[in-house]
Image 1: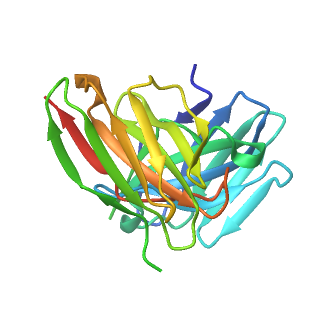
Image 2 (image 1 turned 90 degrees about the horizontal axis):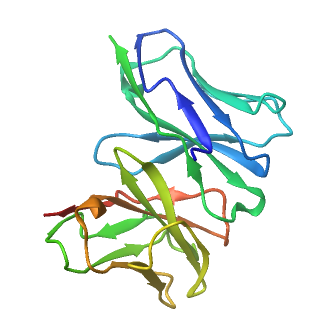
Length: 113
Length: 113
């Protein structure tokens, strides 16, 4: 049972455009929702994270939007750059972090120059 | 601060063998978690160690085990290797047990022939 569903699997965006990746979760015990960025040959790196008591969080060009009632959250990358080309994972963890992070299947993002 | 380090980076084994992977967390971090990353299943939580004790465990068979030393370094062992164990094994460290903010290492790429 996939507890965190991520879409799309792959995404191509023009340089300067907005990249949007969506995730939906099922387990209402999830209390922490991070996004990770992974480049080939590297481990995932934490980008930005949000808790359910906040509907939006922005850090630089990266914004998380969170809809608690719909159990959905999304990552927006503004002014997308070729250097943003990577695989992005959404994740969720239960209150206190027990049972580790549950990851989505990932989105392969390509920013075309 | 140095990041999470994992050794070896690449490993080739044959079915039935056993393997040990090593992880050194960020200095000061006392929690180490292990994840398996495969194209089909994505990133899956294996287990978490804190203060030399396994605190959380994912849904993996008993062939997967680990331990943590007093200096917080951790090792993961897989016995009786199967072809399906071929994966990228990622180690993540955090300051606290059940730590939500996890920092990943580059991973160990294991190929089972």
